[in-house]
Image (cartoon, rainbow, N blue to C red):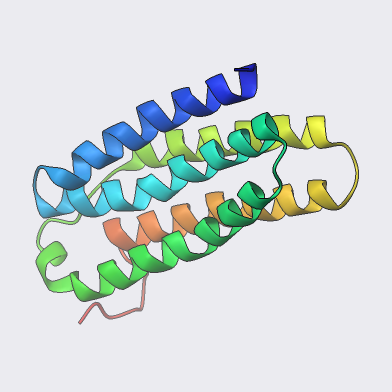
Length: 150
């Protein structure tokens, strides 16, 4: 076991464990936020595992999850708009914490990867991961001005 795998284990255990607990218990607004944050925690774990095991296929899987995870949250936000309208979820702290973990992991891996195709792929994964989850979290909490929820 090397440091990359140990870091991935820590990210997955803390991040995914807490989001699984949030999805399995509590009110609807906590479950939806936890579903959104699960992608934000699994993707950095996959990127760290990719470096630890020297397998680029994990980066491709993280890219796919970073692209489709926020889309799934937006679908849930649309389907559950009536239930969430009265008391919208607020998760500013966990959202920014997950975004911070994603940024740190991507920047460290970019420094290790050096210039090349893998650097570009890591930057794309990072932008999709952070941007997508921030947009999905905003759609859950307040929605967007000028867009009807019903």
